[in-house]
Length: 110
Image 1 (cartoon, rainbow, N blue to C red):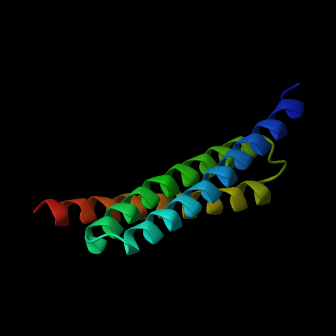
Image 2 (spheres, one colour):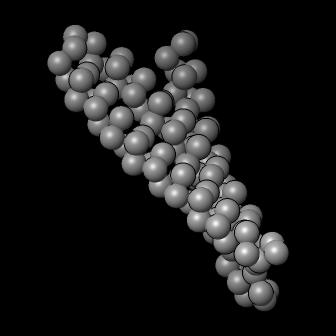
Image 3 (cartoon, helix red, strand yellow):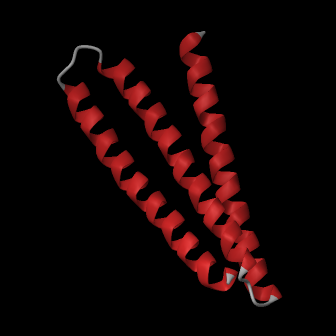
């Protein structure tokens, strides 16, 4: 029974990540275009980048969840090793984005 449900959960999770990614990029571009016509361009672009970073972290977390679900269906150790590498890369990217966002917010508040 789980073999029938898990692929749909993976597909749904990856579809949500894709939709959020598209919306995040469009919203980020919209904010930057709007910032071009405002007086405080530098401040608004920093905030736009932070929001885009938070959205990208959400996308990465959804993709990590899909990778975890996919590992349930892994048939052999080779597939599991590949999923582990993908999982590790996505975790490192998420950690790096969070660290950069913390540095960015600490730099503007100081």
